[in-house]
Image: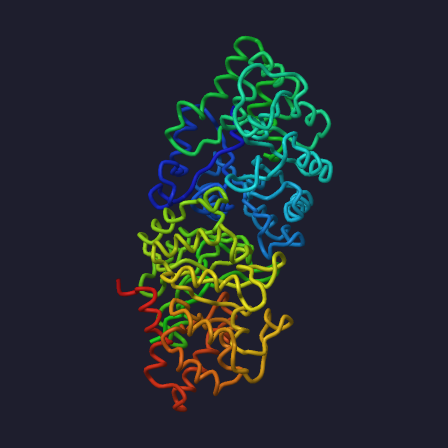
Length: 296
Length: 298
């Protein structure tokens, strides 16, 4: 069984939304490529913040997608920290519970380009924690010209946030996050996809050991790169943190069926076949951890 | 004929405006309200910008309503200045033209809580002007705990934008805007609904005189208050700026049928009946200016 922790889709046909070559496919298309790859279920996340794309998606769009494939697609809701009156005192619980009652199992992908410790972000985290839903986030290496919660090299503001919200399950994603798998990450490469051998002592292993309230979303080129750039390290990392890592793709269109859709899956399967990860590790990372954290 | 230049509407969501409140009225509820009072069409302003509401709407959600009721509802798109990676270099013409081609007649309601002279806002004005799409906006008196484009007292930052974008049609809305109808507005009153006689020398008459690309959206309690707080002044104001004012309601929910749906309409009809507004002025404000500025016949 495979559960994809990170995907995107929309109820609107591609030509309806201004997304050009990055057009996002419909639920039919997503399920079609899931069938092709043998993926059973996927978490679908709305792009409900303005920063990442040329248009904003509604939570209702995602709920309609999920309703078409209730056994295959698991909806998350997007909650912008500026929602309401652009205030840290916003009653986010009302919105979170509204969408939780409609079936949303988590919040995200949050891509607002605000500092990780902005009081409005912490307002959202406080309510997400009290509502008991996990939150998927994207990290940004700077303010402006990109998207995601902004941090500095070494992720000090993320760490402060993990300390502040011990009962909120964070699902960590993106290249500025996963680049910290290695201790030699630097100002020049932390926003990208550093390759080559992983140097011991990276921030990610450190944060995983220190804070039990977060998990790694291995989707996209960033998550795949983190575990595959140095396969020996990667398989050992998967084994060490087998309860804290989640299979994912970040797929949103048919054209990704030969890369993003299958690359992590193939890496995991190769590791299993070669005996570099156990069946138990494989099962946890591919679906059991997702079942647990999403309450499926 | 009446064209309402400012409404909020929803078809596929049921989240409330606040906890224990209803949400935006549905198209069917609008049509029932409109038919009852005699409003022909309404301009739908998508709730795309996070600041202002709990519902995050997409432009596509609004276009779906326009497709279903093309004779009753006119779509605007909303373009967050932070779209496409939160940059003043973003090519916002791309989404603007996309939605223009889909039938959108303008951009708004712009409620992002950014300063009027933020480079990302300037970028939006540049692209809206280039694409010839009117921009309907809400003004904020502060950063945080509110929504709308932020200015200082007396609107100096807004004036720079209207001056430097002479071909962009601005549709001005909100209480921090309409309070400037009077010359005696103060730091304490400009975010509210100041009452009583209007003092000559307000910023709004000054700005309307100075900038022909500036227009007033008379919707909501704010627009209604601006023209009705001192009725004789209000009718004279409507007559003087008959080519730059638009009828609107800002109806957000069914309960608005007893207030903003009818307040301004009644005021205008009373003015017409009493001879305080000419038929020509009435027609321009109630629908002809909207037809012209939004290019509804194109």
